[in-house]
Length: 442
Ligand code: SAH
Ligand code: SF4
Ligand code: F3S
Image 1 (tube, rainbow, N blue to C red):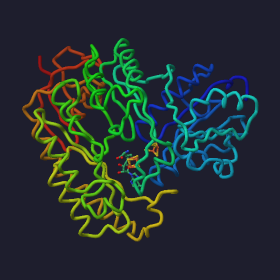
Image 2 (cartoon, rainbow, N blue to C red; image 1 turned 60 degrees about the horizontal axis):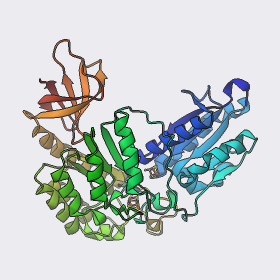
Image 3 (tube, protein in one colour; image 1 turned 120 degrees about the vertical axis):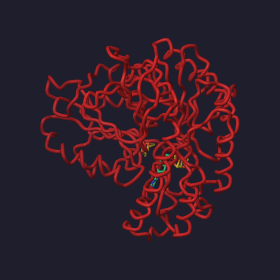
Image 4 (cartoon, rainbow, N blue to C red; image 1 turned 90 degrees about the horizontal axis):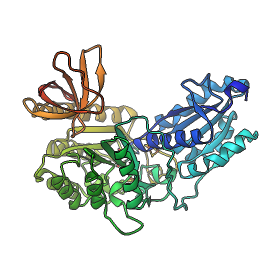
């Protein structure tokens, strides 16, 4: 590497919150090894991509990036692929993009320091790949969190559910939980540093099992919410099969636990859920929704949906639409089914055309938009607490977020500049399908 680029790195992250948080840990680990982060590929000696493979489009992004920068290899830059595409494709990446020197899946990040040494010594095919056997979590005291008020904590890594369409069990290895003590220790340290919002992360937080047998997931949630100074605790993602009533009771009992649950349903048809190997029926899903609707605090509900899974008929799709009516979600992330390597659903015939998937997606999104338009109106006239995130100069508004995770833009009193990370009361005046607008009150 040319001298001035020595020990500098650029990192771009794709994918879910787990990847975003892994990148914070990777950055911390690299800094600990004497590396300095830079803002552009051009400035960097080491260029890293933390990748996502959840749908084909996500996977293709990294190969586009690598193709764009291939010419820069001649300047002595080294390239590394981390994350889910790295684990999935393994050494095949070296064939497809010969200028890549390192391929490392998330279950091997604890080996990054040794891998960096190999690269510094001229290694060109350095690998860290997992065989789904590891029991270790990537815990590090070097985490470089990018936001000083709100932070992530991983409580469980990997996934053993093997939903028929999903790459995650293959890209993130087997399910393994951290002890509740180590999670609480990290949460307390964050509270001491001034963090007031913590989001507990896992592909399936509800199957959390304290290796020390001390706390259930709901008890861990409560313990984090009771840390002095903690104002908001969130968690994602929940799996309906493992979602227990004790979580609803915890949210009811403790105001610091946010009144929002993201509970991916994927389909409203039991027949499709069965083909997806989701391990619950439409009725069981709706039972969990009923628990939340009956809670003493109003709980905001959001979900994920896949349209066009192999064999999904018009009637199945109609059941998904009717589920939207029944639940009245505050948000839906919807996706066209994308066949993925290694997954059981690959054996099924992906016979629904892309046009048909797109048609179903549009119908679903339009329906949900109408539902959200009505749902968000219920907040007009309410005074909600917003965590201040920043300022939108173009609109002359402050940007905030409610406990239910809704965007709440607001105007402040003359001469008042609310500080990012503080909490302010806002009277909601107007609503849109995805955001609220109001005025700060005293
Ligand atoms: N662990 C979470 C989801 C992780 S992936 C859970 O169990 O719900 C996030 C979302 O991506 C999923 O909820 C699903 O809706 C979508 N997704 C996953 N695999 C997909 C695929 N092959 N095609 C389309 N969407 C997919
Ligand atoms: Fe994928 Fe299913 Fe695991 Fe979620 S629970 S990560 S959808 S296999
Ligand atoms: Fe993508 Fe891996 Fe997350 S596949 S969604 S980055 S777990």
